[in-house]
Amino acid sequence: MDLGPRIAFPALAEGTAVYDPGGRRVGVVDEVLIEPPGGIFEGVVIHTLPLPGRHRHARPEQIAEIHRNGVLLSVGIDELVEEVGWRHRDRDRTPSPEPPLERFARRVLDTLGGRR
Image (cartoon, rainbow, N blue to C red; front, side, top):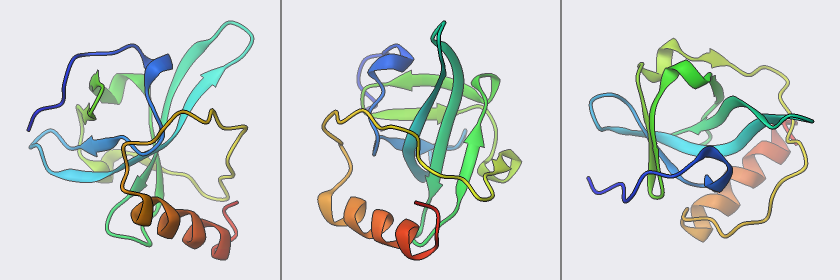
C-alpha cells in the first residue's frame, strides 16, 4: 500500500481512500472539517464502503497519518461516530482521486438518502 508523501490536512482531497489500522480500505474522505475562522482541523467525514455506505466522523486523534493517496486511521471504522442527518458544507473543488463512477454513485446515494 503506497500512500505517497505525507500532507497537511488542507491539501486532503474529497475521494481520498481511508484505511483502517490493518491497511484495509474502509471508505473515502467525503469532507475535511475545518472550523473557521482560525482554520482548526476538526477531522474528516468518511463515506464508508461498500456503497451505499454510511457517514462516519473521524476526529483528529483518530487519524494516525494523512498522505496524498490515503488516510490511515488509528482506530477501526466501527469506533467512529456515525454522522446522522449530516449534510455537506461548502466543498472545495479540488480534483478527486476517487474513481468517477464511484464518486457519482456515492453522491447519488447521498441525494436519494436525503444526506445532501
